[in-house]
Length: 459
Image 1 (cartoon, helix red, strand yellow):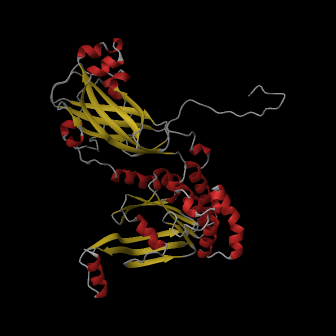
Image 2 (cartoon, rainbow, N blue to C red; image 1 turned 60 degrees about the horizontal axis):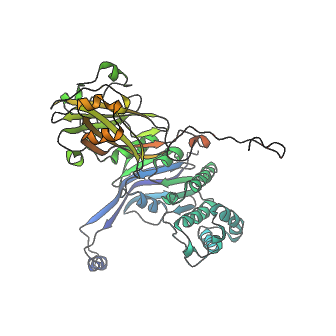
Image 3 (tube, rainbow, N blue to C red; image 1 turned 135 degrees about the vertical axis):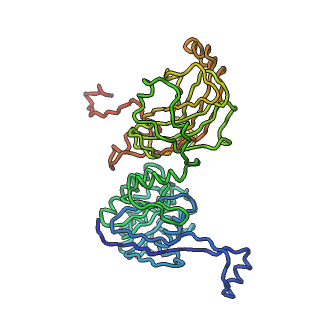
């Protein structure tokens, strides 16, 4: 990768006037009145991007990412500060932008390539590659108005990548495509990078930031919060998105009160001084007997994090306070996708972990769950809860049916989305980065053998 800087921003800010009405806006423009209200999308942003870098930009909605890309692409001018961009820029900032809906895909491809500075001969040479990469069949010769959103992005990316730009800017466009098209796009982006093209990608996909980017910028409210290692940027990003309050617990909550020493020694690290995530009582489903004081997710070294690699082990820690006397406690967790699909759930009763026969008001309970993340890359949430049975019912649990146990359980506390985590592929860019398809890894294998007409034993 070259040390040559191709994109440089120095103290860039972008503000917009806020007007009470169209008449107010017109009056301000005609009489050069100063508008008293403004919205600042970017504030004093400085950054350098080198030739051949694959840079990721991540942040919550409204953090200024799209405004930044439009300034880089020359679509917007900054309110103050300077911008320097060296080389031909291709940008995918809005799905289908620049396409005439009445023109065919071929006609739009030719028109867009011409706008991007390609000669007639270069366009003729590139069209077969554009058609092949878009892979939309006969729709390439049909009006764009008949396209689905996926066809739009396929054609747009095929055109932008075919012009061999010096700088390629992409704003969330690839999120529309299916997984196979996205893989093909990133393979093409990697080839462009090898040829010296600089790629700037805005995305909410932690997997893409971690897997493809050399460097990442985390934006929030128009400011750069972090610049550097993509893993660290994603970790900070997920910390921003936690719907929790981070604060230490009091001294009493920092001491274990139950469970024998053998059970606690199986935890791979020392219980932290405090659990970082607390959920307001009003956001918990409670019956008044138990309250969740805090929770947190940690890796095998005891470090709190929100980003894990596939096949890592996550430790989910929770601490509860007993408000009224209860029977034999049972603490559980559920791991589900961000689309509310339950992947896994387990509680202490299923694990046969040691528990007290009953608990008194004022007692505190420490619980940890250990899960190996043999699951697909993506974003996940963890629900936590605590129930109880009478001591007699719990003692007979092996002789009772599941329906009898479920009906006799007293559910005291449920905290939905108590923790959030992201699972990303391990390093690499080959098949090893996607060892299986779907939500979870299962015991399976695939095998291929050559067969002949005389040997059909493998069929």
